[in-house]
Length: 281
Image (cartoon, rainbow, N blue to C red):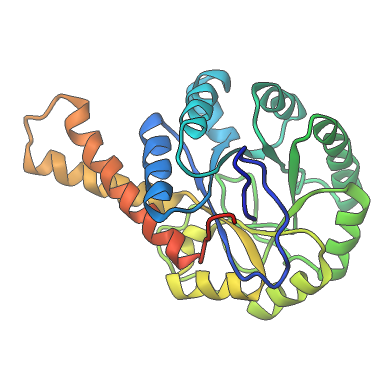
């Protein structure tokens, strides 16, 4: 899912075998780390704000405004994306603020209602030039929003894309949200079948639980946008814990959040290499 200089996500050739890293933001240090990591790699990146992060901040606009500002100042293309929105009103606010894409998640609904709700969001977003990602199948975890269930069926996925007009599709192929270990078992045959059946980019959620080699294989088999949140939070928090352990009298938040930001920056750069992300030409 290469990005233009304005941060717009563009459909790649299905055989491009290059991925786009989509990394979740909770606070400003995350934004800065992700952008710095992408700049070091010389690749595009997607900054994601989830509905859960919005709930943590109490409102979308403050954290979104900071995220958009950092993205606009970056030396590489940066897209700002609303992740796992279940509220059409929140989607509308993100569009108004200037997000270039949104993920509307109606996967908890039955198929027909998922199609109906998603199609309505797509109509609104496309009128504003904003891309829409949706989900079909059930990815485990996510604080109870999702429960483990059937994996995405390729024929149903193709029909869903045709019926809704979505620009990208999150599919269930063996991952689970919020994993602290990297031992998820991906169904690579299913990924390839989905890639053959679905005409829009595929999105891998719950990628923190996937080992490096399998992330690369997932991209090779047809995944384009790869969402990573928990793993980067682990890297950040480990560095913060170490800084506080080394200097237990620290009280200046810059002195321990800074090492977390630096560690996250390095890991973003490394992961973009794993995903075979490439700068637009």
